[in-house]
Image (cartoon, rainbow, N blue to C red; front, side, top):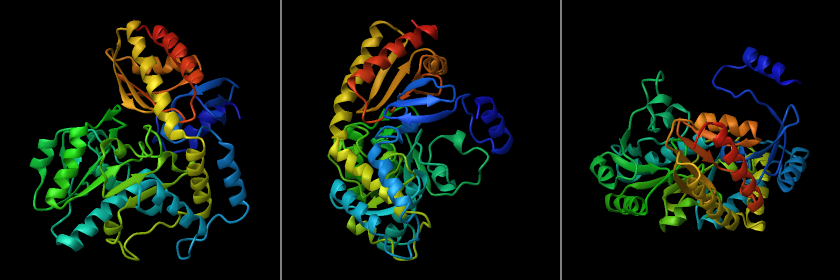
Length: 400
């Protein structure tokens, strides 16, 4: 099918919820994608941090193919062997957290919100329902996770929104303390705000929130949908801060590109849910768990935590070096392979377009931030190639 026909059919038959770029990819392998015209691209976006193992990792492909020919779905009315195996693996990775399976990051965050309220009401009383969240956050597109998201542009037109969320500035511990009321049951934040421009939480904020939650008898909920599973150079981003959340969520690359979300909770907090309190028809199905188990094995076997740390440090260093050539590059920030490049001119979209022309895929967030979340398998050679293409693209976009 030619690109023009794809575009026309998309416009004709699909609800217009996406502002799609005029491109369509038909094949992927590792850090590479190919479009309908056969053009090759180096992918620094990885399906928005989903394809953590690279496109079509052979171990994940083999696991999906085998399971698809064996058993795809039965429902959670029954025990699911692969679900238990993956939960054991995540228990080991996390140091003792129980898992609840769903199909996306938004669903995982929805489950976290429900568990935080259910547990707190049981332990402290029915008045415990408020959750402190941060401005410029992003937690998903369901009505409740949109209500918890600190960006009005995602909420407009969907009012009235579910109540019970109090917003404070990110990295402002004093504001978080001031927002606590007798009704507060939890604080929910991203260790790195991704959708607003790659802004890491400070050490003092994260450590201070953990202490505040302990002091007030509240739960600390971390949205690690984008940061989890080696993305930041640690298995989970909260490891950087030396703290343990009560609940945290995963999705994105957890199953190597296959749809899956997971909500994890400590043994005590997990007891807040009893049979019938929450569920997911497709959550933790055999096919998804086969992909998830294979993906987690690859993360360990290929030392992707170490590679993300090493390549992230190299990449940030090379990007920072471009500031000597382009005054339009301001801050370069992030952890591991979750990187944001701030421009001093509103030309991020122009740079993104030029990158596409030069066979490089990245993401413009707003007018001034470039987001880079490449496959965790990226090599030094890939990064050198990316820097050359980005240099050419910035020049083409008129930056100096």
